[in-house]
Image (cartoon, one colour):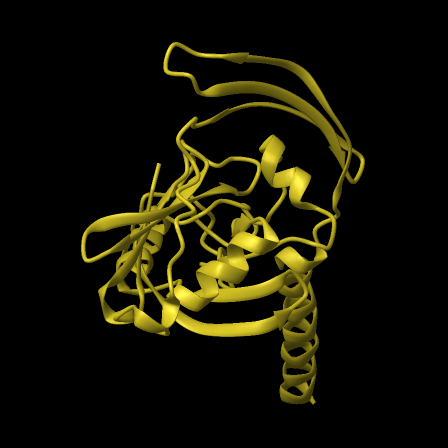
Length: 230
């Protein structure tokens, strides 16, 4: 009888845990609303410094973002002529962009947003932070909820080692999980303005404008290297 009770509890807890993990996925995060630009100016380098305010669920969020002046680089590129093994992505969280390099030459720079704490490294499931370090594109989905989705191989060996270190020194709870389903994707239809204004709404994924993620999708393959830094 005791064994049956323990098995029933274990099964029930597993169901609760699975439901909790699904709640933390980015697809379930409420969309930002009532976005307002409180203040905007140019810094000495010509970058746009913008203070924005919006609501996400019941939470009012105020944040300041800096958008680089040189984002763009839209010279025509035929993706069929690219050796995709020579493509690499660099995600700059402090600069709110994703750079595409081909044979070590930068060919594209896209505006991007992240979670509400873009400069913090991901520590565990549910913290809504974007992990830092070297990753690879694990899979591609051309018809995700947010246009296209390119899944990263998070957690990988280096992030698992970091996660275990945080557990060992008590920085995160013993019950914490590393999380997953981190990738690069677009945004809901008509939502490009969230990217333009720098609204950090994701659960730790990298979000681009839909036209940009459409183009990026044609440049990369499963296995493309991705470096994420502050």
